[in-house]
Length: 224
Image (cartoon, rainbow, N blue to C red; front, side):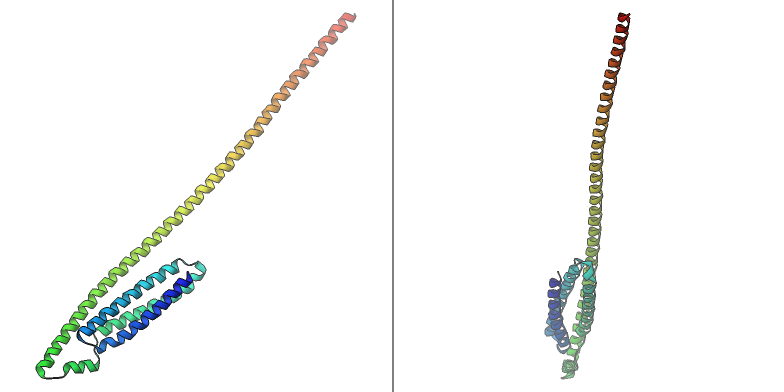
């Protein structure tokens, strides 16, 4: 389990290094080239989000004794991700001095057209940013619902497991009770058998004593 997490860590380091490099290039570009790079970085950030989700799932499935250490590492990666997203957001509407000067060079009409184009691109990027942020919030809300659903499922499974153990203990007690009842039944049967035997013995002894008395009386009268 920890080996999978470490593999995700390596992928995270590779992706974040690539994203950091590309974010640094965004302000130096303009027009279609900048738009394409922005889309590429956004795609890479989505890969990082999915990677963090996988890491989060891995941590949840780890033993409790090692979960704390990996939770701390995951928290630092999420903080790094937040910083990357903030840097990316700033870079989308930023222009380097070189690009700004290039856009402002030339004749007045050309410069004015470039400024208009620059404002349109910035408005377009801001609009895209808002849409991406809304999508990100929806994805985050969906992920939170999925996590809560998973927690509820785990609680249900834990309750079912507990109920199963209770039922098993009840069955064991019933088996033990049945065994005790069987043992008690055998003891009672033995006692009843001995009572009957004792009564028969008493009856036989009484008959023998009675017969002895009768014979004694008979021989006594006969002798007289």
